[in-house]
Length: 356
Image (cartoon, rainbow, N blue to C red; front, top):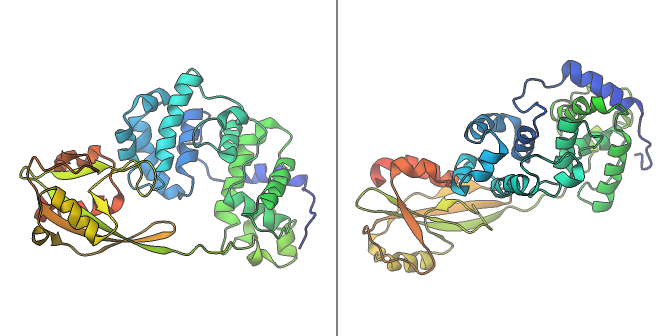
């Protein structure tokens, strides 16, 4: 495999021509408006296009511009993000919107360097915004692009290694088209090629515009590149929910800390042991024998398998407030205004008749 491959001058011209003819067009965020591009780039991080297509229109309808997002209540932002996962993205999105309003007079900066000062915006995301909106000659380097480059130039290296990643950045920079007007089509082409042609498994080499210059194809090592990362072990984690309902049919929710699982979302009291659950119930004046156990819920996060045991109980309208948890009683009709974890959303819907 090639360790010192030189960039190919024809790559950019081929990619731009291919994207304009065969690439993805008509996506709602394919625009020159920085706010809309930025929003889509954050949503698309570690999330499939088909999923984002469902969330994006609702988010834009609620927050049509950066000023509206900056002025919004965090709970409303988190509520609209519910189910999209990686919730730190939503918190960072909200903070970045306020940065744009307070530090940049409500207008997105034009340079990659300045864009990177926004909360939650890394080099690749900043480059995409600058290229799409301002024709900046900046490259992206997400997982798809790394795969394309490793196969194109038959580069064998650990893509998680910082030194190898820096090498890929240098190559990606060298491959940029000379004409700045080509940048939107070029960056979109990189995204499209990695997502639809040079896929992780079952790449469609027969329609690839680089098939005749792809070094991995010539060396018959496409399946080996990029080198597969060592799988991170999935850890089982037990959680216990205290699902409290009062006489008015409201459920008790509290806002979780910003860091950790479901950071910033509203959830029923949640602990990691049965003993802690009993102690928590006692603080609400609930005896152990009054707790009703529901079926276990299994929910997969990236590196964790959550095993959730819900325990239901009736509580007074004015419970004994736990010293560690301050929350609110929320009626079923008002739950939509609170960002809650997807497994809790599904659970409350499933047990609605018996709970409320």
